[in-house]
Amino acid sequence: MKIKITGKDLKATDAIKDYVEKKCERLQKYSDDEIDVQVTIKTEGINQVAELSSLINGDIYRAVTENKDLYASIDKNIDIIEGQIRKTKAKKEKQNMSGSIKMAEDIRFGAEDHKVENEILKTSYYEVKPMSAEDAKLILSERVQDKFMAFVNIDTSKVNVIFKLKDGKNFGLLEPEA
Image 1 (cartoon, rainbow, N blue to C red):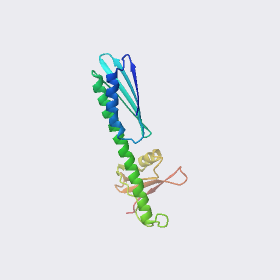
Image 2 (tube, rainbow, N blue to C red; image 1 turned 30 degrees about the horizontal axis):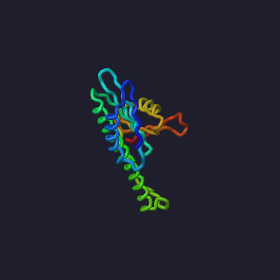
Image 3 (cartoon, rainbow, N blue to C red; image 1 turned 180 degrees about the horizontal axis):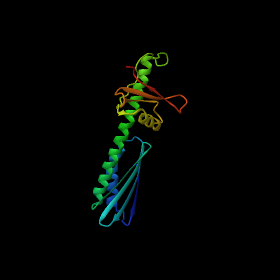
Image 4 (spheres, rainbow, N blue to C red; image 1 turned 120 degrees about the horizontal axis):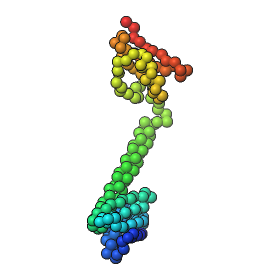
């Protein structure tokens, strides 16, 4: 473990160095490799500020706290960085897990050979609001990603669908008969 302690307006005593080394040993359990820790201590008004930055498993973790007691500030930084490491580790495990599940499903179902046809693959829910066809056209023209929109026509009180035509300039309207 490489630890570099820098003091600004505050001298890093042997007691502080020993305390930082002792507390940083808690971080070593998260990595098999050697970790780099940089600590900056300084005084701001009546508070002691400790800034701790560490490189663990290729990720940089950083915490800055201030307290009247420098040792309490160092403790808080170690707790914050441990939380960041656990959060990153859980996130990576979740990504790896979902990736491996997807691969297992692809293998199990033969994703290369098997094509799903004539099935409902996606369901979207939306709110159908009463409005005029002109209002629906204006709203749909603002929504670049949407190709159609369902609405209740205030003139007929029936569900209508307005859609963009392939020319990109005009619209079509679906109205139920009777």
